[in-house]
Image 1 (spheres, rainbow, N blue to C red):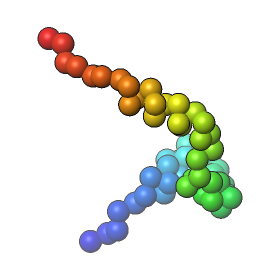
Image 2 (image 1 turned 45 degrees about the horizontal axis):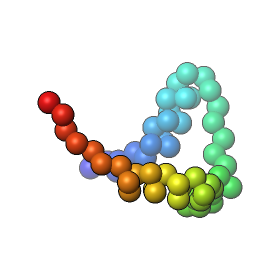
Image 3 (image 1 turned 30 degrees about the vertical axis):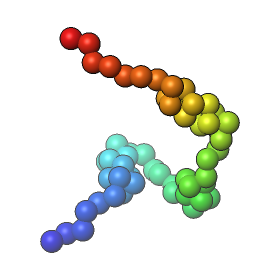
Length: 57
């Protein structure tokens, strides 16, 4: 059984088929676990906490 391809690998193959060259930067991967805008995230969480969803027929 073949291992499943990641999204990055799939995207790289698609881009290569279209003639695009992709360079993967290890520095960007380091930022993937960091919250870049904590104040916006906090505000969004407050808004969602106060939002009530209901289903209307």
